[in-house]
Image (cartoon, rainbow, N blue to C red; front, side, top):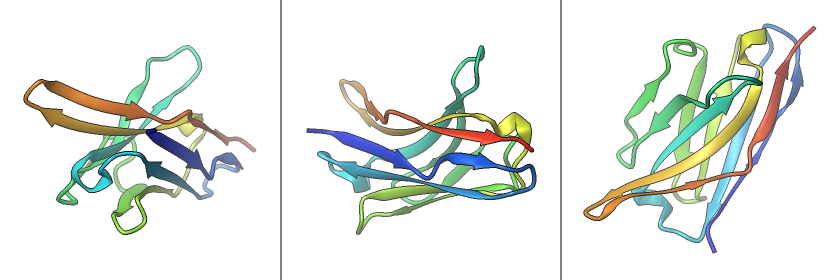
Length: 119
């Protein structure tokens, strides 16, 4: 059974930091690209950061220089270190696993964790 379980969300003041973690199980974690998405109220879900199976990373322009994505294949975890948080970072953050196959993409989602940036 595939599971992606996020943790680490919460309430933080502007300028603060949070570290999100996602624990994966039920699939071959190391070969999947792992991403963090977020969805704010009334907005579409957007891609925040991706780390590939070869550890290449990409970030949304809005978080470059503030967020860092990393993975630990020995523990089947992916993390998102978020620094210098802004109120506009407030959203539900989702962990995503994606693998491109000859028959099409295969992907899984976590249940999400709430991040609220407010004074």
